Amino acid sequence: MATNDSLAATISADHLLFAVDIAGTFVFAVEGAMAAVNGNLDLIGVMTLAFSTALGGGIVRDVLLGALPPASLRDWRYPTIVLATAVLVFFLHQSVRAIPGSAIQVLDAAGLAIFAIAGTQKAMLYKMNPLVAVLLGTITGVGGGTIRDVLLNQVPKVLQFEIYASAAMLGSACMIVATKVRFSASWAAGFGAFVCFFLRVISLWKHWNLPRALGQ
Image (tube, rainbow, N blue to C red; front, side, top):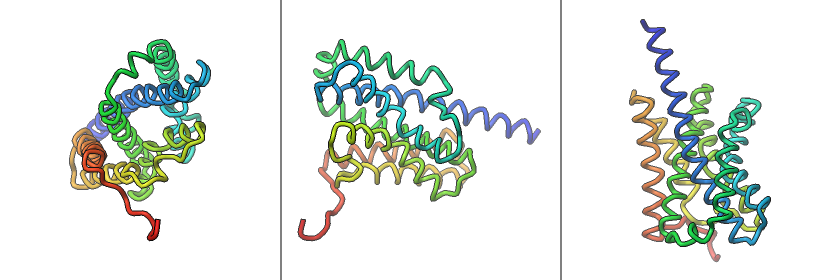
């Protein structure tokens, strides 16, 4: 009976991981494609930035975990969603651009939370210690955006003073704590995602920033 329960828990965790990965992939693909459109890139550039933004963090995570080839390259659904989204944004960018900036920021916060939790979940499935799981969750959340910003010749958000990577780290840590106190996998993931999302949105609303070096 215990074996069956463990198997059911593993299957449930895998389904949860896949669901949040797909949702985050779509959100970040839209954001990466719009960044490319705003940067006046061509269709290939839009597809490249959408791919990098949506899948870059997860690929880095899987490489560090030794989960090769990375999940997003083994499963055709990930690149298909990304490239289809990129093409749609390329042709419908005027409609996407009409979306208020605040809504885009909320979507970005949602994508950050989803990817941070997905990365943490996978690190825990690979039996990583809590610190490494938090770091891998953070990398999953901010890695794609960092690659996107570098390709656009911009200073990555994660290196600036906004509460961005720190929100991902706190959400990942909260998920691990919730797991340790025996929350179910879905409740722990939801709690961690909520903390990350809430902190990111509140920091934007209240204009909270991390401190800079003295004299700057």
